[in-house]
Image (cartoon, rainbow, N blue to C red; front, side):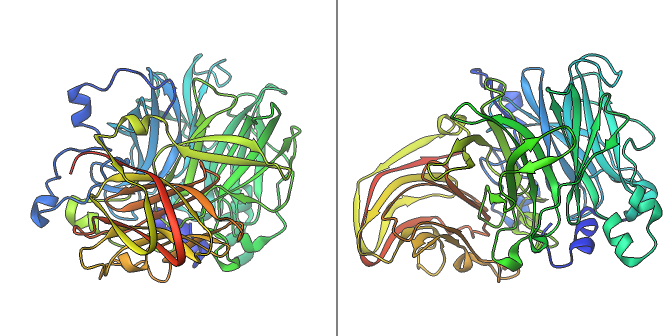
Length: 534
C-alpha cells in the first residue's frame, strides 16, 4: 500500500510534491466549539506538553495528518471543503469534510470518503451537476478523484463519487471513469514512470460547447479530457510546457475568469517543483484560451501565485456573489521536500498540517501587457480580529522593537526609504533577539527568511529563504503580514506578490521589530490585528 507521501516522493525524487455569500450570522456556540480554525482550548495531546501550538485562525484537522485541500462546492448556505486525511503522518487515507460560511471559521463535518484496503483516495475535485448530466439528479454533488486501482501505483485512475445530500455523504462508482491506458500498457522503466503520474483531476464546465473539461496532472504535461456526462471521457490534446525543468504537474487547476478590463480568459495551473531552476515549489499558472480540444497559453513560461515555500496543492473556486470575476483559494502549507517528518504540533496537539488563509483571487491586466492573478486575504478575516492595536509611525535606522507581543495576529503597514539597502519586519522575535523570521526587501528580492526560527529536531534548513523578484528601484511597499503559531503569510502591495511559509515558532517567539540597514526607513500606518486572544 502506497502512502500519500510515498505516491509523490517516489515519483518525484527530491521534488515537492470556503466563501462568498459570507453569511452575516456568525456560527452558533455549538458550531464554534467544533471550529477547526479557532479550537479554543488546547487539545488533549497538548495537555502533556503544557502549551498548545495549534493555529488560531488557520484551518487545521482535529487530529492526524492533513494534506491536499479539494475544490469545494457551495450547498446548504456554506462552502463544503474537503481535504486528504490520514490517522498516520504521511499515511494512506481518504477525504474529510469541513464547512465554512466566511472562510475563517471552519466546522468539522466528518469523513466522507473513508480509507479502503489497498484503495486510498487521493486528490480530485467536487462540482455541482446542475443539469443532471451524470444521471444522479439535478444538483447532485459529483467528486472525481484519483485512486490506485488494486493498490498498484501505475494504475492511478480517476473514480467518480456522487452525493445527493449536498456533499455530506458520497457513493462511489465501482470502476474508474478515466482509465490509465499508459499504466495498462507500461513495461519499461520509462513507461512505468510516466504511468505512475496520472492524477488529481480538475473539472470545469465549458459553456461554449456545453460539456465538461477535465485536466489531469502528468509527469511532463497536462492531459485534457472532455465529456457530456462526467462518465464517458474523450482524450483531447495534451498541454506540453517547453521547460521540463519546472517538474511535473500535480493538483492542476482549470477555470474561466473575467479580468478587470472585462475580457474573459481560461487559466491552467498546477503545483510544480521548479526549485532546481531557482523558481518556487508552489502554484504555477498560465493564462490562455481553450478551443474544445487544446489549451493555448498566452506565454509558455508560467507565472507564480505564491513565492513562498508552502502553498502547495492549492485549489480555487468561484465566489458565489461574483462567480465570473472573483475566486477563492486555499493551499496546503507544506512542501514535499520536507513533509515526511514530525512537526511540533504532533507532540503538542496531536495533528500535522494546516491550510493557508483563504484568499480572494482576481485577474488583472498588467500595465506592461498580459494578465496576472492577484490574491489577498479573504475580506472576512479583518472582522474576525479580537483586538486592534495601532502603533505610532516609526523612523528606523538599525532596529526598533515594537510594543507588542503575540502569537496569532497580522501586522499591516507602509514602508518607504531612500538609501537603505535592506528594510523590513521581523516577526516571532524572541526576547533575547536570537530567534526571528525576517521579511524584507533587499536589492531585487522581496524575501522571507525563517532560518533564525529553526528549532532543534524540526529544522527546515536548507529551505529557509524564499524570495520573489521585485524592481530593484522600488523604494516603497505596502505589507500585510499574517502570523499564526506555526506560519507566516506575506501579502505585498495589495496581493501583487505573496509568500507563504510554515515556520516553527517556539512558545516565546512573540515579539515584532522593524529594521533598516544602510539608511533610514519610515514605517507608517502600522496596525496590528490580533486573532483568538492571547
